[in-house]
Length: 340
Image 1: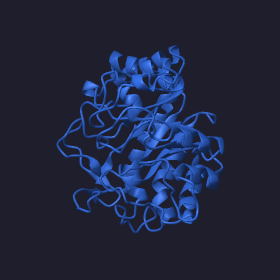
Image 2: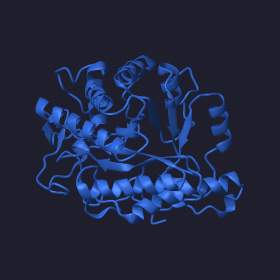
Image 3: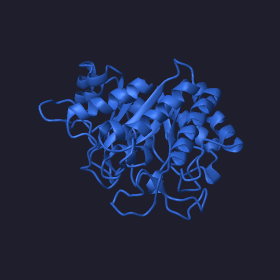
Image 4: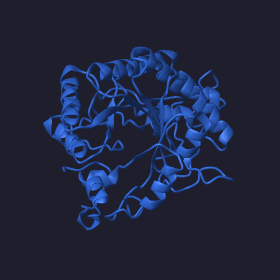
């Protein structure tokens, strides 16, 4: 199950409803659940009082119950660790007076509307991720995912449009990857060697669908190599349509390229089970599941993540496998959740 923001955790605390929400998907055959993004322990990490935190005694007790419920249902679960960076709205909770920060203080639209991160800021965020990783293992989770996609803080460092720095954290693709690699290395240092670390990445950003971190496979290889050396075990590659080829001269999608260039397992995601692109969806398995199976059998990638289809129907997988596609409950609405 792909991470999907829901905003159903008042005060940042996931309750029993959240535990049962994930447990229903595990009970219906979803083998690995990656949770909705959950804020690391840094004042500027978030912009909502209803998105869960991954720090503080009450929130962590809630997450412990979530992990236990999923395990009892036969599944495995990894929290997605998140910092929104320049996407934060100043004045919003959970820390209203926290500043907007980013690599250059530049938002996705190019506006200079925040604060460029100092080395002290960078070190604090790296430490927050490392603490969250250690906490995840202590709570019994099965790994972690670091959210490096969709225009949030880590991705703001990776993308030249939002990273205008001239120090070691900017410039070419290697410099722009340094922040992400330091986070990965710090997390790896705080967890067991066999505790999986997934890194989610994307070329596209929210409302910037043509954005690209890497224009050529060589740039992508540099970035992935640095992250793999730092300790990434799995690359979770987000595309709007998993059927789309990423670079000229090859039919491989982004996940296919990640596996080819690193040899690491890769997760592909992109409109699986949906009839058309967001925001309005139709039911069923319209995203060419036969092609998906063919790609997996060719070892283009190793896992496929399903997001909105599972958001709409916790038994989507069971119904697909049983050929009961006419019973699938369609997903309708925005990306902020489901009560099912």
